[in-house]
Image 1 (cartoon, helix red, strand yellow):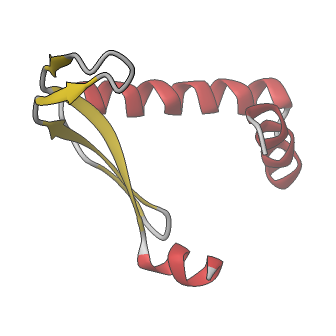
Image 2 (cartoon, rainbow, N blue to C red; image 1 turned 45 degrees about the vertical axis):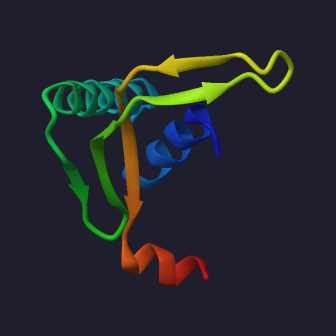
Length: 90
């Protein structure tokens, strides 16, 4: 399901216009992005949690040239699925 299909289904379920649902979804995106930029964790019951994870730098090797280089540490966004969602899928 893509974003457009999600907006249509949300519109049908809530009896709201698609434009209003699209606006709400974009505001939700902005809230999540801003919270993750601040390093906060977002927990959504029965779905999971989004959090920022620090990945340490490491030495990598190009298999073609066999040349080594260093990848610096960085922050990534991680997602941990909830137990309820995992059990409903499996």
